[in-house]
Amino acid sequence: MALLLSCFIFAVVGMIGLLLFYPKLSFRRFSIDTFWIPPLLGATILLASGGLDIKSFWEGLTAPTAMNPLEILVLFFSMTFLSAMLDESGFFEWLASKAAKRAKGNQFVLFLLFTLLAGVLTIFTSNDIVIITLTPFLIAFCRKTDIDPVPYLVSEFVSANTYSMLLIIGNPTNIYLSSAENIEFLPYLKAMALPTLFSGIASFVLLLLLFHKKLRAPFRLVGEEKDIKDRFLFVSSFVLLFSCVVLMAVSSYILVPMWMISLGAAVLLLLLCLGYFLFARKSARPLSDGAKRLPYSLVPFLLSMFAFVLAFDRNGLTLQIASWLSSFSSPLLSYGISSFLCANIMNNIPMSVFFSTLLSEGNAGASAVYATIVSSNLAAIFSPVGALAGMMWMSILKEKGVSFSFLRFMGYGALISVPSVLAAFLALFLVL
Image: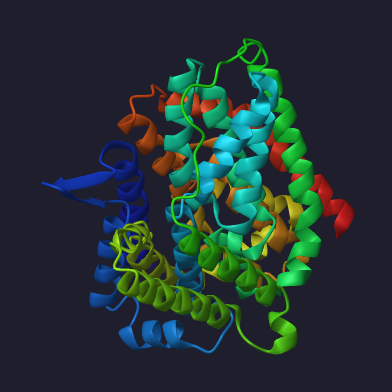
């Protein structure tokens, strides 16, 4: 037990330290994320020392269960690839430029349109894709129009991590937690629709209260309107992404796992793109750029945290914590609040891996499961440690020369995330 706790503390503290101070390592033109290195080292020490035997770890990875981490990774990477290729077609920038044109110089209208755009795109893609895609565009747009980018950047980030709750595919934490409890696509949507709406309204009202003074000044649109870069790439990726979401919604009826549906769509898009670039004699740069944007660091990170979860379970620690959380009169609040705090200590992905076992051991019920899902999304708004999306967002802002400190993030985050989480919990109480 001592070895397990030492390895886990090393993994968590090391991860947070690297996220805060050394998020990337650069070797000439090549750079890698660093957050996954301490968890991988900790898990390796655990396996090498016998704290968790390799056979048990392999059996856990390949078990025919709904929370199989390999299948979850396939699902998330497939959906991310579909979304990234849609972005490579110029679709997201085209939508953003349309929104700017519709605003006609009114910042309040522009603010509303960009908030809705970030939310809608997140629903059908993922929060990470929206942050990677829209953040550089918003910074460039605000500089061209000479307006303060902070209200739009904060709104985009909040929306991306709020509306990611609505569908299972919006966040890898949704996939993991719902898979652990065998929750299908449509029952998930039915339960999470009202919490997402309540949280979305609460956060938008708070954003308006925080930034209404900055939004009073008019803006002037400079530059040409963006257009779709590649029509074939747009049509093929859009149709396959849309078809994939529809088929996932009925996956329980057609008896095909969601990971197979997403993988089939991603492979088909890959083949279509290869054929198109070959026969049209065009550069395959969009395909390589899209592939580069996949979150490869998630693989060693998720597998390492899964090893810790298995070790906790085999040492009886999971059952003790689960019994304590289930002893409260409201599992919705006990699991919801504890998972929110835990995500801001250890990041939302390891929290979700850990809590998936706590929920199962404690027989916590549907309200606790959905409350944990809510926290796994909204924890990102409280601090950059809450999710990888926060660190990615902060990294982009730093690269683009936008001043936004850790403390400033938490200042806005505390004001927005706490009421948003409580609004979502209230909606869950009404629904369940």
